[in-house]
Length: 521
Figure 1: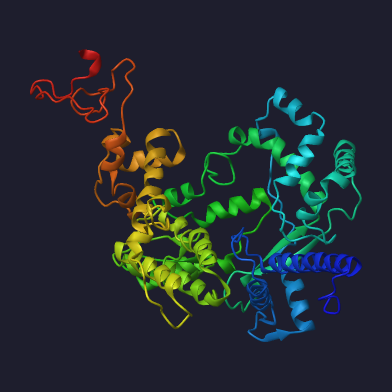
Figure 2: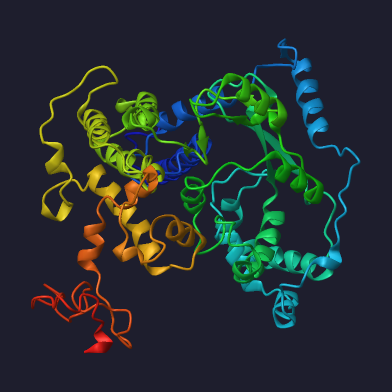
């Protein structure tokens, strides 16, 4: 191209434009390649910085590489010894012990009706194939065939018909080539510095065609799962939240080993006690602790640990309990090189990643105001800072930056107010879905003889309940009762008048009729 620069004849100009177009295409392909390797799914627009993706791809490779692990005797294994250590470990935990429980199929009652079964067995349609494929993330890791969903999505106009015919033929004939369900088994570290094989969890990277078939079958079953799966399973179903498990666990005690043994007999699965531990109240004697831990076959933990990623027990020092949120954010900020992102990139990063990191915790617990201020201070420093060690001039206060963009701000979230809004979702679910398992447990514990609207903090409440009740006045101020027969609406205590400003009755309450209902008027 350098030799063609400055040449003005038509042939040279045409050749230069051709080469320039080819160069742009190659550079775009290179950037897409490094973006896929970097796995920065939050970055949908803004910066197009190849150096940014290079750094994160290198960081991910270094972080995910497993160089050595300890065996059961505490001896480090590397190279070929590492391979045999991992394979032997999984062969051991996935083999059967030959003890099969007395499982009686006849005792099960059918949960799927004949009409539902006929709907499940109807032939698959081409639209279901395309819907399943395009519902996948285009940059997801490929299987043994080396193709990610983005390849099939991009060239759907060319290969769509052949792809659809093959998938429908496999599903209608209930058979497919034996290599189709091959998968790459990848070990993902559950710790920053894994030492044992137990610190790793395996995932299977399947071929896209196989995943499309599985997703089509799953989509067929989705509408029936709510009636089939027990309500105690709170995750992976539409309308149910995994957060319910945390809310329920905060009010119930631990299961005993006898229940686990029954589960092992009927399911054929074994509980990994190497990953299990037990915590005790400070009033429990050392002798009792040792006896119980030995009986269960688990180790004693110094604290109550976490359940589904959140603290199991919250004590008085709440800032210490939730300090892990700030630590994670500090670590993430330490790995983000400010020089590789423009201000637009920083904005996307802060809004889509940094401010989303505490969301899971804030959906259950009320974080201390001082902790929210610390998190906002970290975000503010990252926004204005020049490097990881040098802070810059803060040209605008954080409060003004949290103002919506249409009013002159940047649209960042105020974390404490956002925390209250997320807890309001839990309060709204308790108010509008009183028959859910979570709502029934909280009702039995805190407001047995009334509704959530009239509930109070009560005696010896958990911190989850304290968090939910923090701003109950907010949801009360926006609630209105729709009058039906009027038998459950109190005249003076409930908001039932069609007045947007004050829905309560203003006249003095009659002393003789404190519980007068609207139906009695």
